[in-house]
Image (cartoon, rainbow, N blue to C red; front, side):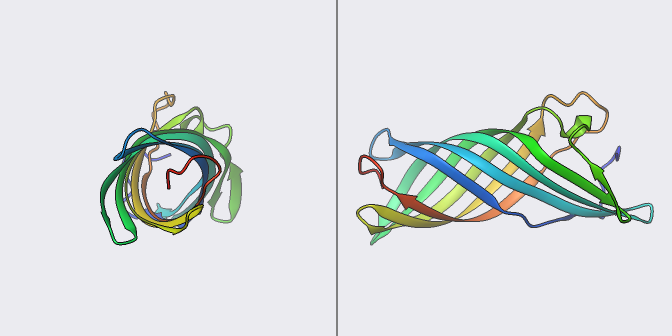
Length: 170
């Protein structure tokens, strides 16, 4: 839609849900594989028209969690990984007219998302833990061959709840 970055673009808020698997590699490293559902939303003003986007992406995330240090009951972790996702829902509203984004080239195909995160985690029992973290992600749609390139810079505050199913890796 735009051939340049839009300086009037405002990011929107959205939710992010993950369900996954953790596997301890050693004392400092944990493998993390998740299935995720993310909302990426935004608002923009361009040539006097108001644009609103609402999208939902489903994806698979693969990451490594590094335990930086433990203090008292808290673990301070860093996380680095990558996610492959695709749009499962997408709407654009332009001056009260709604368009379906599912057939649009710039929203089609798989999107790769890098993941950089920090996390403060605490066990609340031997079978459960909670965490608070900050994620910074950038998306790249490698399948998009149109002139209109779309990417997201994502900032998330993340609240996590963990339940032990097998093996004690919390």
